[in-house]
Length: 383
Image (cartoon, rainbow, N blue to C red):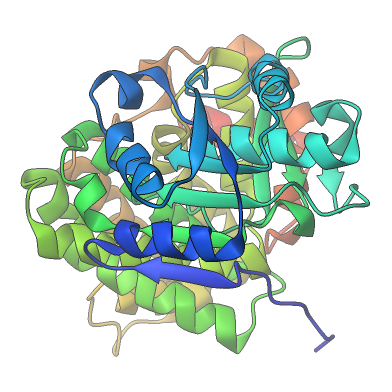
């Protein structure tokens, strides 16, 4: 096994009310003025005020950019960067789910490296560390608050750019489950399935290690036990807390073992049709794993066991099928759409979607490398 690097923020805060501790940590770092990157919904409902109060109590100035779209764009990054420069902000705080985190990463990366966010598509393209970034999470799914992954939509090409860069890793990640209590059930379901996808893809990845396997296993176990509860009752603090741990563990797994074709394909659906990332992942996940079962049946059988099934008397192939069925059942139980056709995907677009999916860096560690026609067939099976 080749030597591998392990990436994650240097400081990670977990558990109820840890947002209060974050304020003290930020003050200790000596930062003076933050650009808060969030979205309009979180700002309008007043959730951002929980963060600004903490900053005020610690004498830290701030300015708010709430222009992040659900699939953050190159324009969102450029607009946020302008606000940062005009207000002489010396660090960035992302507040929200994956979209604000990714937008903030784009802003912070370009702030220190120059150019445009398009210049950094790919793996470790940047030369300098980004402007310091603190990521405060309000969902349990993307793990963008602690990863080196940044996904930005190129509006001209209608493509989600995968920016995988050690310099986009936040210096401080905050997962306070009390910020997640008001998350709608549909968003809870979508983000939870996103976290499951991270864990599953990391576990079957070609560069998985014992460390990433341990993280992925525990994430799958927690999601299988607590996601339904969190969807059914958003005020269940235990379920929220355990899902926060689950998505973080899944993030630790895929941040270092990378992902696979579920994400490579979901990025194309999201960029082309402007669709929710977690839902695309959830629909594609069993279909991609069915394809992967040709070479990764043993690993998928493990996943069935992590999801609570007795696989002791199953062959590898039977265990793989059991895992795929368990994933489908979990999706049904939390009301995930059954196919991408319900989201507006059209078969005539699959040729270009498949072409772009094969260019996505996430597919490089999929356990079985696919042809263009095989990717198209997976899209067709997911209709």
